[in-house]
Length: 311
Image (cartoon, rainbow, N blue to C red; front, side, top):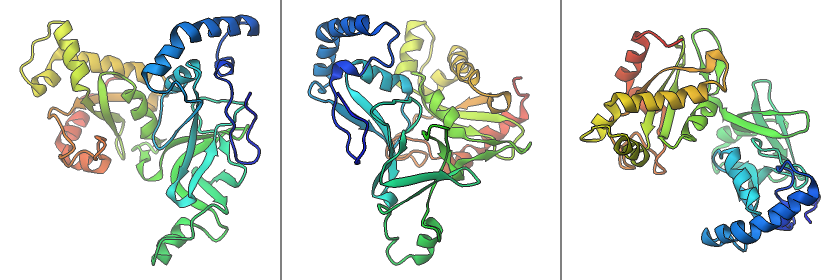
């Protein structure tokens, strides 16, 4: 069995013990059910995806759906979210072995401290911080303050149990014309969980309501169109099809119910040009560049605000 980490190490635990906190049956029945499922199904799936010898896995660097982590846990793979950056030379938070809280990146590691600034920025302190940027003393001073706290640039929250949740980057915070602070990445990440949405950029800074530019998942949307006899001739015509726009709007509405009224998407536009990593709008990992997209698609964005918003 795995012990909570105490000296900075996380020991592997038996895969048959991982799914219990998530299941809803008495312990004995859970063990029996899991044992049968492991032998008949889970073991083969792990072998197929090349993780049959894996006992513990870590995920970081980008948001991951809690349901995906739950799926790996059900397979018997002890998957944990961790958080850190280059400037702290490794991880700053990790999920404890004895308390998995999906949707968070765990608690501060024993060799470090984590706190929030008054603005909600995540701060890190400890001997594991870097010494500074080479020949850039001013940038170093901006990053590590006089009290030794590293300013990560990430916005988040820490609950009463010490679990840290990352919500956005400081520079990406949207302030609407009504003065409401909104973290767009929370909305964007939920939109990207849809099989029909490849990427999304929420718009709304100094605007009366939120809108969104969406890049469709070409393969899945094309299959949907073929399965439902929706005529199209190319990528642009696929994006313009009324049925496809209705499909994407349904996906947006499914996400909207998880947010307050002021945080909901009122209008959207589809990027009608199929983008590749060579296009300026995308990073090498096929993510939309927020600032560049705001400039390149200014006309489409303005059009969404000229039209009447959906209540």
